[in-house]
Image 1 (tube, rainbow, N blue to C red):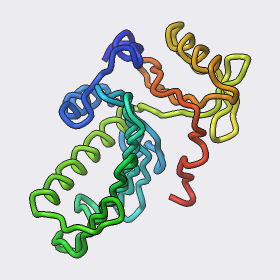
Image 2 (cartoon, rainbow, N blue to C red; image 1 turned 90 degrees about the vertical axis):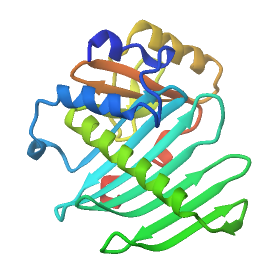
Image 3 (cartoon, rainbow, N blue to C red; image 1 turned 180 degrees about the vertical axis):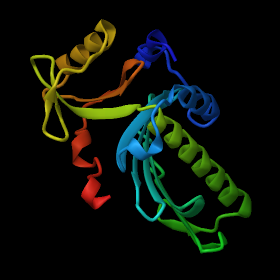
Length: 233
């Protein structure tokens, strides 16, 4: 993956959210030069999809457990989707999806030690519904895509950073650090334009990797209010 392709930012999306995650996985695995043992247990990453921005937080436990939180923010609507996933080794044990918007939807699925369905619940506009086997299979497939993508992003050292934009061109990160993101002039101009139309400091999310940096998302909402913390995740 070249620096040029990584720096295109929101103007030229890299990938489709569900349809092309395999391309991302393959490209990043080729870039992964570090052993898994040297990777931190808690990581944040993401990528640009055709229809929105994807952010992924991950925690790897000492008992081979993996906990993921995915947030998908579409470009053209406020229907943000969050997905929480848990694995024990390679076995998926838990899925929880929240789809916000005019018709909010909440889905929760659990699997037992044998991988069999033990609990399912779907709620749309406050009304509970049953999930079909095909729907559950689709959620399992999407979970496996997210896991593979997270594996590749983590191995490829693609790191998500986010915080509040400052007047001097720096960002006060959610961890309390003040840093200057290494973004190209087009990305900086986009942030400054959004800031001119906001009375409060806008939130900025960007990606850093050995291949370069990429602007991921700019919004008026405070990303730090719901960013997961390692001790509580």
